Amino acid sequence: MYISNLKKQLSYWGLLLFILSCSERDVQVEEAYSFQQPVHFPAATYTLDNNPVSKKGFLLGKKLFNDPILSRDGSVSCSSCHLQATAFADSRQHPLSIGVDNRKGVRNAPSLANLAFMKEFFWDGGVTHLDFTPLNAIEASFEMDEKVENVVGRLNASEEYQQLFGKAFGIEEVTTPYMLHALSQFMVMMVSDNSRYDQYLLGTGELTPDELHGLVLFESKCGACHSGVLQSDFSYRNNGLDENPIDSGRTRITENRSDWGKFRVPSLRNIALTAPYMHDARFETLDEVLIHYREGIQYSETLDPLLENSLGITMTDEEQEQIIQFLKTLTDRELISDSRFFTTE
Image (cartoon, rainbow, N blue to C red; front, side):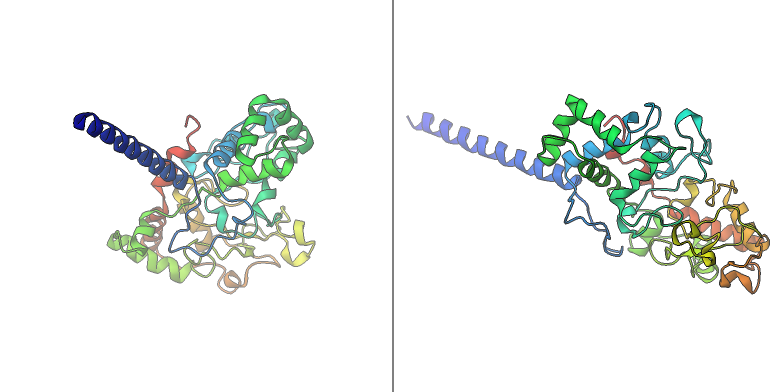
């Protein structure tokens, strides 16, 4: 009798431990699919209270992000122009992104890393909330060339998508807001906060002497615009690419002539991965970019005042190379190898 009772107790405690371990694993999995605020970053600007990230929402957003069902002819997905290997920017093969019917876009597709910390989006700041950014890509004639209501109709016609939306949001019918919420849950998780530069800031890693010198040079020569831990002040500036800018830039949004040819200062995080550079992808290498700032500034009426006086940033060849060495420390290998974003996950 004693042995029998002991076996029952051991069986009970074994079952309890198994349940507890399963619960702990479930919690760990959910934490892996929840938004984590980096300690050295500014507070996230995305409305997480209104759309908290969950595993089911994230995976649904990932499926949508990689599904050409969003485009008119089923040929283009979000991931066609935003690749994990390039920090969710476009590839060198597509300097100006390619849409349906092989239509060429008008601007280079920038990295989507750290969208959770931004207040305005696109080169001209034409959208002020992350949830609405996919609408531009879906409806632009040179991108997905589709009406949102048609996309939602196809999602509702899919039994698989109906089930996935039901599990993620507890809804019976797919609607545009929930589609956008799912995509945002996926995109806000593209946090780039573990480069060698981040490790240096947090005291967990070191930079070489050349990289440190490059950092000092960068802060003195480039830091006025590419400031803070996100490597941008997110202002709009004309950086002297053309004497007569063809692309109206920020003016397209503000309708103010004083904004002609101005574009958002991009973050330089993962810059070594995101070539080509500038809104029109005119520069292939970081050397070309710095040579532009050294000797290629073109004067125009909206040229940024920081460049207007000298018409160039003074630096030697050695200093240019050291700045580039520092810029390479901004590459986040963890982001581009994160299996949560793999299309086969």
